[in-house]
Image (cartoon, rainbow, N blue to C red; front, side):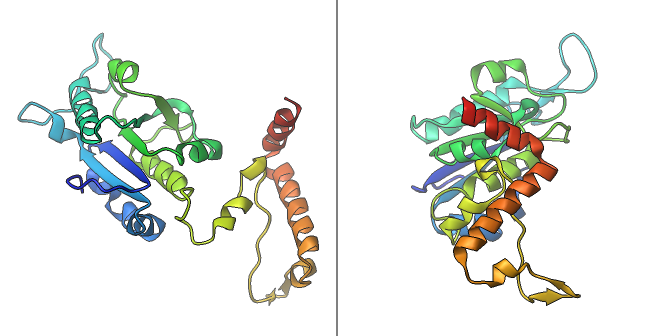
Length: 243
């Protein structure tokens, strides 16, 4: 996967010690179609290929003692520098996925979707050597206030959230305008056929054909749902309006 560099809209490099974890996710559904449309190209790098010892060791005990292991700097530096040499000086955003990072959001996904090159470092164990953070990493992200066994699953979440925002990836470009978290609101309720299911009917306004009334109903329901489930988003929306 790493031998050919094509001119796709976005290049994504993933540094991991479990490269096979990405096979299914990147070769199914939207991600598969995005590659077929040449909107994105993925390059998976096995960190163990960048070690210098026969055991392909990527971790070691922390200086000062303590539980667990820490990812060594040498293979990560080797891998990042090799990738940068292959993309011939083009700017790439290096992102470390770890519990200490800032929370990932839709606004972050939109910002990153405009980049041409993104590199993900999947953290593991007790974390990475601090020199990796200081010298290589541009941003640190977490997908929530909980701890996972590694950064592979967060990387998949990032990729899905970011790549789908690249123009032309989704079939209907308008679908991006009516999603949860757009404008700090949750999405309105959805209904499809049949119009009556187990004696539960679809709201009449959705069957009226009056698109102005439908739009007004959807906006009202979006605000209502946000107020019930995520009032913090409404406070954020109000605070930004007043800034």
